[in-house]
Image (tube, rainbow, N blue to C red; front, side, top):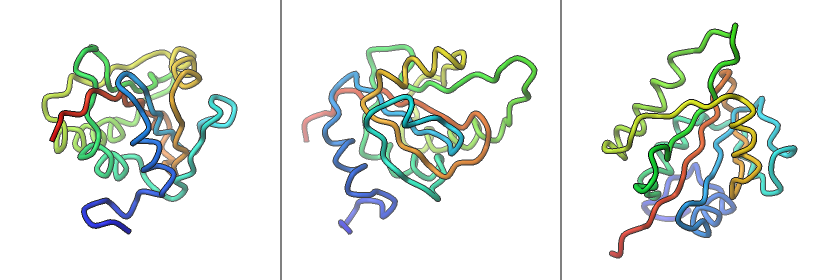
Amino acid sequence: MLKGISPLFSPELLAVLYQMGHGDEIVLADAHFPGDTMNDLVIRADGLKIDDLLDAILPLFVLDEYVNDPLVMMACVPGDEPDTAVEADYQAAIDRHAPDAPPITFVERFAFYDRAQEAFAVVMTGETRKYGNIILKKGVTPLL
């Protein structure tokens, strides 16, 4: 445990966030996501909900200010109904820690998979709500 660091962080997740550079992306994936198929670097965060992880990550993580879409979610497949609480819960965490961030962008399922394959890492969570996946693009961390 570290003072001032959320106990939700595993050592692996904290190390990955530190290793990521400007423009790198991390996928916070729901429990249904094919993480091991999508990416070679998969971190387990079983039992954790994504909105809780956002509350832990965003105080330490600068979102990329040089792109229009530093926050990306998977759009529902036509015919599926979105659970509006998922986006609302994520947006509440974003508003607490990155209130100037642009709105979440939604991309088609296979476009999301393409980005996940190129991401720095995938974090497999215990989030069980459908379409709970979100990608965060890291920005430049200011000097202290």
